[in-house]
Image 1: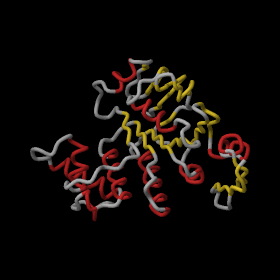
Image 2: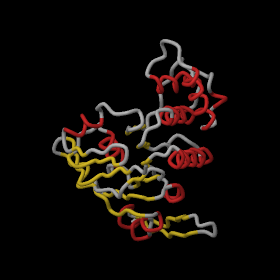
Image 3: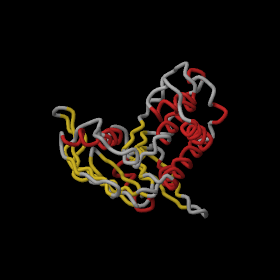
Length: 268
């Protein structure tokens, strides 16, 4: 059954400082990737935290499919943290990578799967951890302690910990921030595959507009705490949007393979 995440009229602020104002998103469907883009300090990470229940906004968040609910204001946090089935969850992965630790990569993913390392995990669970690591091409890292890994490799652990829990809605805050170009392409390809095959409704924040255009099914442009525009990459990443939101002059092209690219000429 297709699942959809709906966010309507969501507002949030820190004290008297308004951060998000009347945010309404297009439906985020299972099997698709939605990218939140926009300049720094425009509210992208805060919006993910509101959807995840880390912050308590005003507005409506609804999940349709296996289960649906609507929550407003203080009720939202209790609903998101409430008693839900294993196959009906919103999962948020922050920008911060797992801290240095003596536990191995395999143990870190196992911990995310069953909540503790004490006691003997079933063969089924151990096999599931192994399959997730193989899927993310992390087999060779399985026995290494987290403290021995680079920041990019730790970021892969965060993704593996999310995948093993099989959420219906997966929120990823800057999943490529610590990765080089090759690994950015690989990780976004994996995220796209996870959205399609799990399936999951995936929302990511990303700074690189070319990567967002290549891997996202739809893009939401945030500007000064509000939605500036939303739609397909071709509908949203336009020269006019770049002038209005990013304050740059740029040209937008689509190459022979259908990949969108942009070239910035000057700041405004």
